[in-house]
Length: 303
Image 1 (tube, rainbow, N blue to C red):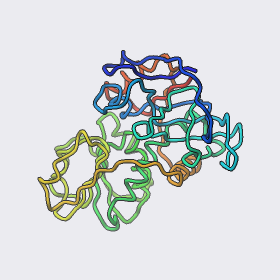
Image 2 (image 1 turned 180 degrees about the vertical axis):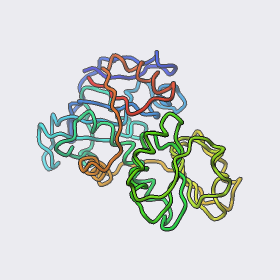
Image 3 (image 1 turned 90 degrees about the vertical axis):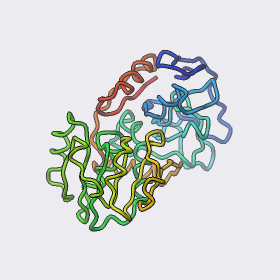
Image 4 (image 1 turned 90 degrees about the horizontal axis):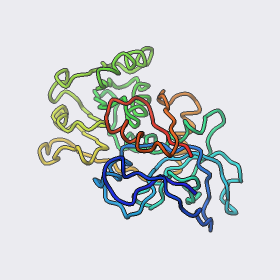
């Protein structure tokens, strides 16, 4: 089978379409991959910023159909499914024609959700779900969300803008301001769409959620407030503000969270993102586009 992977670290040029044996089923669910999303963690793994054993198949997200279902798994051959393989922890990369994975971490794709869209949901959606679960009580609080235009940020914004009890400001790229102004229209949350760090007051927010990598905005948190981030390589020094509760979110495999994200997407309450689809052979181009920055939506590779 074909798989997108690396035998050495470096720039996008080190990506290869590898020829590998199909995975052994054993007691695992075998998924025939229809689509797999490209995420920042894939870029960090490919470049060597995040160490991994080599050779490695990349990828955390996938959607496809069941090719083999072990007895008692709750799945049948042909079922449409999605999964987050957490490649760095499990050693299972999603960018392969067939992926064998523990069925307890796999969920059905709801009717009406295309598989190319479903593939964009797991890592971003589950991270956002777990981050919000770690956020302190938001009732009556002033909140700043950094990076609403990103994958995780989009899921967070969709949830936060539906909360009437808090005021949520969004910090986005200038090119995304008008789109987010439109998305805010008619939503209950009060707040502003900001595009410049100079617009942000020092120590003005009860909670700052960083989904974009802006450690300097640690200073935007009020004393006794909270700062949560998903960007370990672009994070503030917690010791510089002992009066602030600091949390670095590391996503964990959780089927219930995956099901919740899929159901939210099926109900139309999730983020609205454009999906750009490329073949496995153009994985390097997908990495280049994401690495350049300014890319909107999600990049998806298909076998």
